[in-house]
Image (cartoon, rainbow, N blue to C red; front, top):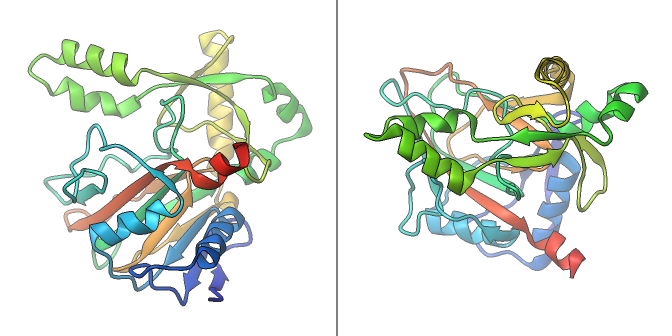
Length: 281
């Protein structure tokens, strides 16, 4: 099967047409989808109709599925399809720039998000290429950050534990379990070997080895540098659209301008890339 791929920008994002994700596909078609993901970082499949089971089966072609999310509810019996359900009474907490779960030592490879119900207007999502952000750094800045690392932690996820009857104990337990992680500021993609800038405003806390004030200055520079429209794609959702993005080299922002209206999304997270594991074997 030859996929029809329509680029949304030269830098990031493409729509994929001519494929029904609810049915089984050949390894060749799955490889085409994977290559489209590598080439475009975020790919969209409009006009899909998926059960949670079908979404999981599609995701399973690309690697290992994540355990149930520690905070969000789920839309399936096993807890592997995360339910993102928002309205005036349940405002979202994803309306800031972030790369998923970078406070883990091994953050996930990809996310697959299915639009079950979308508002008539608003509710777009933006993705930014961390490849492009790195490429646009000056040579001096590339040298400055080449050997530096940054500390990431759970950020606003703390709020879920602070609402507990015993907030201090709940937060301490969560920090002990989820903790924090140290990642290089410049990472190299395990498949493409391209360098990318691995920091994000939601979870990156400070630059290791720097005094706090200097760390704050450098992080402010990086965050403002990343947040340029030239590195981004903005997507208007339609009911039935599926998005799949490479979480290693992108960050994203779910715009919360649709409230008080209702929005329901189902997300599956792929924690380990099958191709990466095969390459390392």
